[in-house]
Image 1 (cartoon, rainbow, N blue to C red):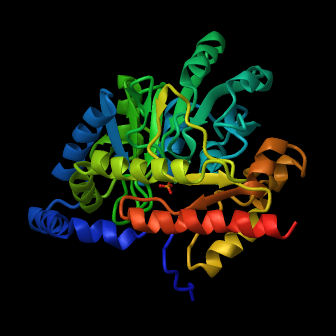
Image 2 (cartoon, rainbow, N blue to C red):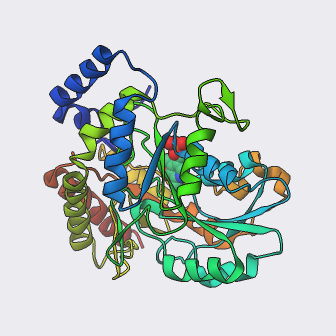
Length: 376
Ligand SMILES: *Cc1c(COP(=O)(O)O)cnc(C)c1O
């Protein structure tokens, strides 16, 4: 059983309740349409999300992992190839590379921004390198200009993992439009979340878009004519209908997240918490609010006792997961990722967290620091 927290980490149900009638209407529309796979809703959502992301194309797929996987497949990246990935990301970024048959090559992040450090990328490039996946971790855009420069210099594809960054801006431009192609996830807890699984690829590359449309649908453009050994990874028609409703609220909900983030930044300055760093040329969308603290476990326990549910993103970096034991990395292989894993803590943030709740969370954090000083 999950303990009953006074303040949950993220109130997912509240998001659906706010839009209940519109979602119900969307549901009935699909039921009555008679089209349940790749119908009008998927097509309309693709058009609307491409406009939102400022890209020429959007292709709806099964989930975020599949979005990244299909991009790699469509670029013919596979066995014998290497793809540069952050050492401190959610494991899905790595799994997409593995699914394609290629090898993930970890590069450490900048410890202030949590995002892949462009200055460390060139050292990791070999003759086998085919692509770089930059993750906009926690909703903060990665530093794409130098990454794109490296991509050009070495002839590498630059792929954005935008699963946590719907609507974030880098130098005024939308994430999802900043590289050769981007993968989005609509997992319910993401900033734009479905009522189940979903994902999308955005790109300005018309050939890539066409190939992913084929790959997601059994390698077929015309029914029962199979050009490629494809997959079954389509954005579900019902989820597309729900996503169309929720997309209309994305900017407003991201703005609510920002109000909470600004409040935390104001209330928690001058404490022992290391606060998230906002790069001046970015507008993050605060998918998570991640602080660092040398005594992270004690802080989490303290918040638990106050009825506040915090989480750790992520407790074990991919290179130390049993799933990647075959790559032969050890403790110490990627020190920055390991230090992050042992010190980060995500405190609640979301469009349905109230400012009163956020103050309560801030106060609990402030009291933790006071309690600590008294015990020295
Ligand atoms: C959620 C997430 C994914 C995977 O998305 P799914 O839809 O769950 O497959 C990939 N990368 C990052 C960074 C994520 O946060």
